[in-house]
Image 1: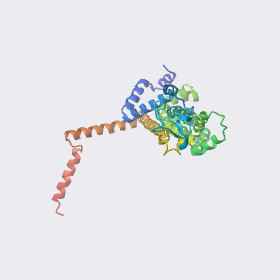
Image 2: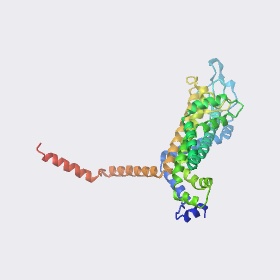
Image 3: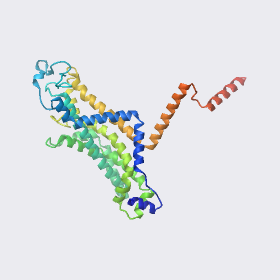
Image 4: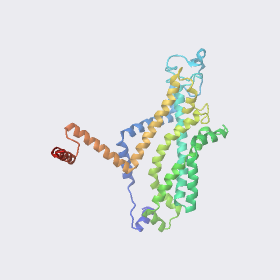
Length: 359
């Protein structure tokens, strides 16, 4: 029996909630959303490609760094020889103009960089936001006011402008993917802190938290044992929505030339190099742009599905809406009217009254 349960029973409150049941409810609600399931499958495939990039490129027999000048038509400005941008059995998606580097290898390794940077930035945002938010919610009045004003300043900062300024002054000797993740994470944690602070202010007034205080628990012990489990749902929900935004931010910074630097492959960096080849070698531009679009869209849909699955009110609205659609389809097939009979009765009475009215 946990210490929190003992404290709650001492105060006459039972807070025991079966974790397995909650997990089952989450998966059942998530499975009810077909779009979220498709998005989850796409995200899983992208993660698999990123993790297995060395194996996949080894099967292809290529790597993202080797130049192939013999496959470039220098007389035409560096356009790949052959049809469809140099696609063949050795180069599954063709090669880069001017360099001849393999596009599939660079896309696969670029997925590792883009997803890794976004994951690192999300972890930093969540960690800093949770610490600041819990401290503001549990701290004294002046601590809350101080941290809230700092959070307001962070939220007011324009992410791209501040990132451009910070990344431009850091030497290139610093590992660039790590630097981009840190910069994005340390500039954009404000909204996480606001959400966590608001939730903390609500949770700390509940009976089981008061019982923990009466039992002599310290502030940070209460935060660790009692508040963090209650903060999991909103933090996970917002993190799922932060991830695609961080992928877009990394791609934008690399596109502007201050993010991940060559020769490390990145989708945003590939877009920068491809913007002048959209006519001669359109796949060079379409492949990284398509990868970014599919990744961000899938993660956004999945994040919305996670939010719906974790929010009982949203789940009930989804269930009611789905039930009404099914009833309407069944009524349409059987020829029954979907209009409430009382409404028809009122309309009939109104029609009779209109006919009897001499005017």
